[in-house]
Length: 117
Image (cartoon, one colour):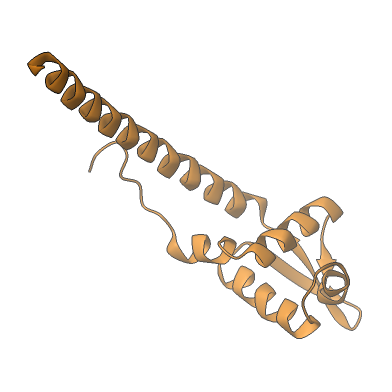
């Protein structure tokens, strides 16, 4: 395993890959949690869609819920979100290194062509 090969949690990345779910996480973080009803009032999707998105986030471990009257109150699991950020940073660093290598190879090819001329 190279220094850039780190296990990536596909379920976690899939959960935060959706823009509505990312916006939900932003709102929950900013407001210290919230209910499906409150989220549906702030987002351009139905409450039923919000519930489905929350289920995906819950399965990925990104949110936890607790009873709050007739509803459930959701909050972000910041440790799990930190893991996602860490994995993203690791993948980004790996791609930066790959792109630098590609650039170096392309520049070496160009220099070799220029020397032949």
